[in-house]
Structures are given as C-alpha cells and as structure tokens.
Image (cartoon, rainbow, N blue to C red; front, side, top):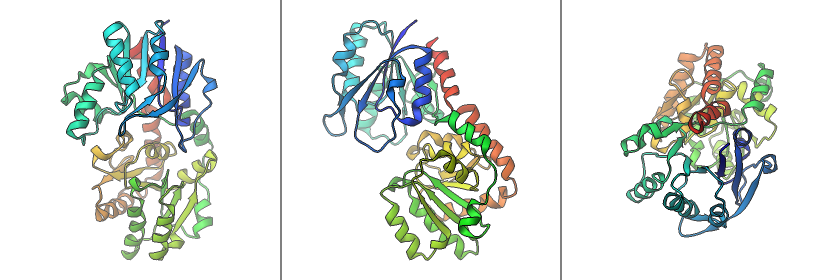
Length: 369
C-alpha cells in the first residue's frame, strides 16, 4: 500500500469525517499547523499518526510551517503527497521543489480553491507557478476548474472534489426533523422566515439583509429574519435593526453549538439569504432543505455557490445591489411559495449527491487507485 503524506493547515472540525475516511483507506501520516483562531477543531488523536507544527510568519501574507521540510524530507517512504494548495505557505514551495528535482517519481496532489477570476497580475504569476508543482489538483468547484483550463492547465489532471460538513451527524438529525412552532412561538406570526447561519462578519454583507426587511416592509411585505451565529458585526447589526424600528421582526439567536437546535431552526426556515460570499452556509442550509440566495459575482464567491440552481435550490442577485436582492426575495416566494416540500427534496438531493464526504472519497479513490 502506498504511504501518503497529508499536509494541511488546521484540523477543522467540519473536515473530521473526510480526514478520518482518508486515514482509514490509506496508510497516512498527517502534518497540521497550530494557529490561534476561533475555528472549532477535531481531536487529531483519532488519526493514525499526526504532527502539529507551529505557524511561522514570513513576509507579508506568506508564512511557514516550522520544521515541515526537514521532517518530511527525511522520510523516503512517502509515495504520495496530499496537501493544502496554498501558495502562501513557503514550506510547501520548498518541499515541492525538492521533490520535483530530487524525487521526481513521488506524486504531488494539491487540494485547492484553484482560481477565483479576480487575481491580480502578481497573484496570477505566483498561483500558476505554485499549482504547476503538483501532478494533479483536487479542485473545490467546476467554476475554478474551467478558469484553470483557460490558464493552460490540463482538465484531465484536475478533479472536482467539492466540500462537505459533518454529513453523517447532520443526516441523522435530518431524519428527526419535522415542522415545529419554533418561529410562531418567538415572533407570534406566520410571516415567511429568512435565515442566515454562520459568522457575522463584514464580508457577509448582512447589513443588506437587514435593509431588505425594512425595504420589503415598506412595500407591504412582512418577513421575519433570524441570525444564527455571532461575530464582529453583531453589535452594528443590532444597532441598525433598532434604528430601522424592526426589532420585532429580527431574532439574533446567537452562536449555537447544539446541532439539533440548529437543524430545527434551519429546517423550519423558508429561505437562507447570504448577501456576501456564501461558503459552507449554503451546504448547511441545503442539508436541512432550506434554499439559498446569494450574489452572482462568482469571482467574489466561495465554491459552494455551485450548489445553488436558480429557482430550484435558491437564486442569485446582482452583487451589492440592494434592489436586486429585494426583488429576488420577493420573486422566490411568488414563484416557489407553495412548493416548500418539493424544494426541500431538491435541496436534499444536491447535498446527498455531491456535497458530502462519500462523494469526496469516491473522487480521491478514482485518482489514487
């Protein structure tokens, strides 16, 4: 069996399942970095063998994984190298160049976002030269793959792997879901429920979502809004809600680490709205049958936007355009308001077929084997 050297940044909790599956399928040794942040991590002792390396600052946005090159280079038994494809890590540059020059039979695989479409000239040069160090690429989405083909990369060497959350846990929760009165009890009405689940950060443009509530109210359309999550924008959003006099229509639920509660809140909502980049918020919402609206400028999106099919699992509005967002919310309920059960099934289907660890493992096996 090939011995696989796996190098990633941090052991994020949401990636536990796919990492454990890789570890079970192959003879793996893992290298992660220790970095101070508020991201939930999983217990790496569940993996066969791991090393935690210090995150070292280099120049500008570049950084190192301290000791990585010397530790890995001593090991001649690794046949495959599966690593995070970030050109900002100097350690990966050094390691990959050494492998290409002195051990050319070893296979290098990057797991990467690939290309966004908004790269500056300097970013294009750095990214292209870095990605060329890999023999094959695992790309998060088809959009990025298509852009890389235009940049001269061979399609046959790129494999769309998508992304996933804690699928098995969430699937068990989905099976328990039923319609409840959670929102009727809080708001005291049956107005449609708009929801956002995730960190409340500036890049998410949640101010636009709050503005939509008051704009739509002025048009005689009342909606309730729920924020599940916390973050640096919470106080500003709360102040905006108060100043617009819509406090009775907005529920700041806060951060919730009880997945059963999260599941109930998402399942009983009508529409998830993410005015900024949507990321894994889309997968979380779709997993529990809630369609998603986000913006249409894909160069400023995260790959999960591909899970959205207009009028089926959500829709897109013109990035940064408040009226466009308002119109898409109104349109969604006009067109799909009486098809909630059917829409739920379409949302489930999208995640169950493409955005889960089983899909990801199938992709990896086809490439590795």
